[in-house]
Amino acid sequence: MSIPVDAPGGCKGMTRGKKLLFSLGMLGIADTMLMLVIAGGMNAGTLLPGIAGFVLVVWSVYTGGSPLSFTRLHRWSIQTVAFFVLLLGAVSFAAVQVLILAHAFEEDTGEAEWCIVLGAGLRGDSPSLTLQRRIAVACAYLEKHPLARVVVSGGQGRNETITEAEGMRRALIEKGVAAERIYLEDRASSTLENLRYSRDVILATGGNTDRGFAVVTSNFHLLRVRLLAKRVGMRVWCVPAPTPWYLLPNVCLREYFALIKSLLADW
Image (cartoon, rainbow, N blue to C red; front, side, top):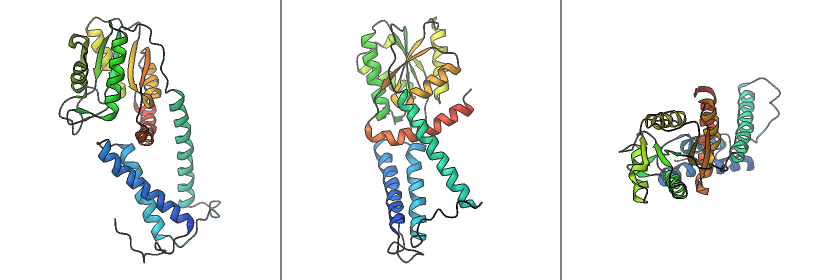
């Protein structure tokens, strides 16, 4: 991206505050580019830092000479509304992150007869980094509970050559899980559908749903899983998979918007 140094305010004439915002903007753009290379796939958590970063960079350059001022916030204006909307968003984001962290723990599953593994994206036919962690935790759980059966849940998304369920099935078999223990749920495109359709698969096999299920998913995802499971009347115990530290900012950002969507639309 080419930025003219002689633009109004310009890079050379930036105030210290605008330089800080410019640096934050460039960091957001770099984060998006890095995540596209490392994690693959486009989602809110990947794209929003870059979009916000671009806006900050452009705004900082073209208003660089004018200092940041909050003296006009007592007046009704578009700037005032925008400021308070952003402030409300920041406060709600922080509150949601606290809730996510508070729920990112494992519950005692006892001897659950069924384990449900939630999909998390493929790169072609290979599990993403997040999904690899879930598969590893599912293998450990199935080894610890040799009588449990597993439902792998996830449909086929963009840039995926097979369903997420099939990708997980292959990976589990490669890791030594017997094929007859694995059941596919290959239609779901959301967490709510993961839970509902997996329960349908278990019921179709004659499984007992009254005893509850163990659900393997990422630690940042547990809050939403518990919320949606309660909403559809499922008793679940969550088994968290760790998230690579360098993915946490992006997945937590994506989870913030996903949680709002689930609260409003997932019924």
